[in-house]
Amino acid sequence: AGPQKSSPLLSCHPSWPPRLQLSMSLQARILADMKEAMRAKDQTRLEAVRLLRAAIQRREVDEQIELDDDGVLAIVQKMIKQGHDAIEQFKRGNRSDLVDSETQTIKVLEVYLPKQLDGSEIQQLLEQAMSETGATSQRDMGKVMGWLKPKIQGRADMGSVSSAVKQRLGV
Image (tube, rainbow, N blue to C red):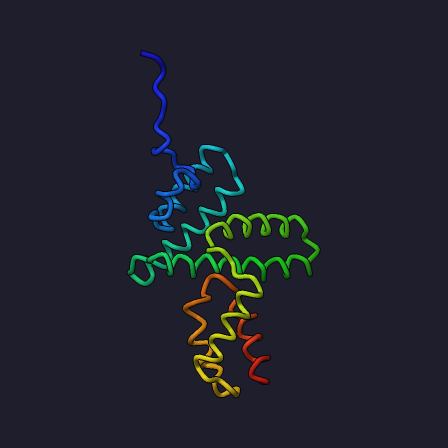
């Protein structure tokens, strides 16, 4: 017999097979990406994914829970936000090498975020939230944000959404 071919279904690459990836949990996808980065000897991606896995495991051990995709997504978002903050600090310290390293890490982590909403989609949701909650003043901001958060969480920067709500309510 000739050389054995590996089945494409056994491939650990995150983009194959697309229909199976939809059911793959975020943690399983992260683990598969780590293995793929090891095989490809991609140090940048491997370091970023290892940091993410460590953060996930740290939280699971600390809180004695098993995180679902939303919990993992929250960790990814937190790490990206921390990365942006670190980049600002590194820029002030004239450490372009660290800026580049942190930027690459953020690019790897952003792969795990869901498709981001664009400005028009956010405005459309904001209009819908305002009409459905009947918001008219700054006292209604909590209602509007409460309506928006489950629909936008992870798909847009909540800080900028909050600013847009404040602007609409005249705060």
